[in-house]
Image (tube, rainbow, N blue to C red):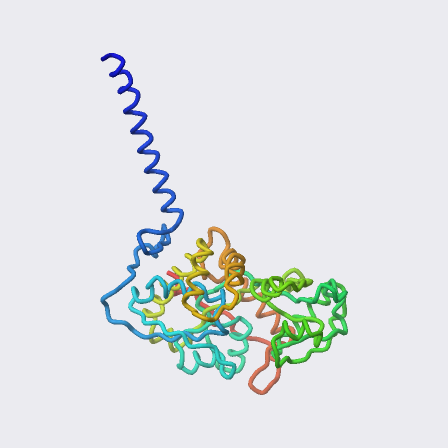
Length: 362
């Protein structure tokens, strides 16, 4: 009897400790996976209180994509997948990319409520009195670079003097590319040709010597195909860092639908915050949502692993925009003569503070 009591006095507390520790570890694992039941949650934020369904009437919003679906758009697809737009009373419709009309035009003319844009485009729109406003930075840092083929012998930016650049026909390209070359000791002189084919195809076929691409997509893509590149990130060669891409809307939308934009940004922020913490799961939601857009799903996963780290800096809320960044790169391209007015003449000043706002980020 004494031996039995002794064993029980030791065994029961030990068993209780095992049960408690096991429950704690299970809870931690569940929290770390970001899942509760069938609905992914973003812990410690307003996102965890959003319901996957809502009985409230839905208001249709149209979002214009800037390109075919890619990892710049992942947060949007995550929010759609999780029902976060519907929870905010929004029926979000994605307008597919069109080569004939930019998201900026669709937004400024009221054919889209919001869109995916770029700082260069926002500045150019304002210069021709067709303004749009940036309401969130999708990526906190610029991830673009000039690239050459690894076997080209063009191993640094100053080697690009006199070479052929495959461009897209925008006035800001020349000043940016020239500045990169000059900041590496070159003259900044090169031949700029506007491409009518895919930039990387033109590079691989030796129609051009170098091109400006994104490290998080094109560079990963060609590396997966076995093509090796020399990569020159533009911000390492004197170009001010900047947000790319951003979400945009019109001034009329801000004035007339402020409450709706708040709801849109709540759901969208949750999507990108989730993608920051759950790269693989977010990539899968993008693949599922965009259906047959990705013949190489591995590219999506690799790109998402890269880009999830660039949506925002550690400890910083997604989407926030700083005055210093907006007065850095835009002012650089204006000073360099890379922004034209409606008559085709370079502008010399602009009210940059009117081009962005953080008011819908909570």
